[in-house]
Amino acid sequence: MDLIVLLVRFAGDVLSLILLYDFLVQPFRFYGLDPLTRFVWIAARWVCAPLENMSRRLIQVPQRDVTPLFALGIILFCRGLVYAAAAALNRPDFTVILLGVTLSFQELFTRLLVPCLLFIIYIDIQFSRHQANIIGNVPAMLLHDLAKRFILMIRRLLPSYHPWSVFFVVFLILWIFQWLLLVVTLLPFQQSPAISALPMVLHPQGVEMVDTPLLFLPVVFLQLARTFFLGIFILLLLNMVSGFSGFDPYNPALALLSFIIEPWVSFSRRLFPFARIGAVDFSIGILIFLLWLFLDILAYMVARMGS
Figure (cartoon, rainbow, N blue to C red):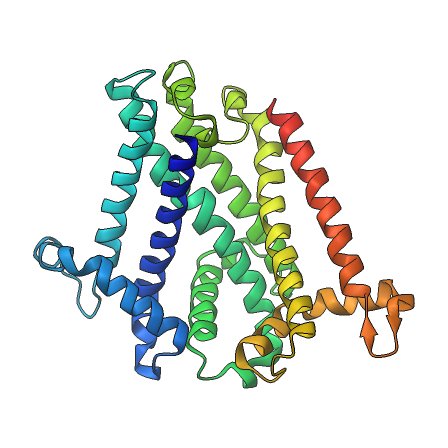
């Protein structure tokens, strides 16, 4: 049953990303469809086709098709019902259904939107140094538009527009938002046996600490930090693999990847100058190994604080 729940959660995450990307990229289709946008558009049309008529009758927004968001809401609700069904044998009641649906919608933010927005701000900071190289690239332009809109929303909270000041303020805002969201959504179920009825894989990290919100703050901080560094770890790994794969270094996707992880590569080369032997650079590999250890330590700290 746990495997089925994990597959359902993974499928829901993938479909959520596809539908969100399809909705957000609508203003940029004028510039053309790159391979990623074309794939997402085809996949989203397949998902949205049965719901288009219903969506347009219920919600009408000028110049925007909200069918992807309509389909996203239905998918999250259905995923919540699957969560509840996984716990039905232990406790088949309305509270379990309500908790399953709540967790499904909560995951849209805690697993996707909050970490993705943090990454978008970070990526936009890196892209800002190479603006001339990303003109016409639809995904890069979409990321910049989202980052700009969010920064304008919080501009009064920024001490300065220095890139790293912006990034750390965004991190703090998203940390507090995720903490509040988890506390508000989970606290009503804290005294209910519904949580224990759900499979362990669905239990949010540190859920048993929700009744002490201030102690729950560092758990959420470590979760968000670990998610961000995990993304950096994956990007560094992709960059190292691409360097040994023989791919064209001027490939647009690899060029964007190099822009994103450029500070980490420069840092590793300054920190481990001895790791360069001729044309072979082992410094990134050392940094990946250290980052992997750091992620392991973060995971251990989160687990200890959660327990």
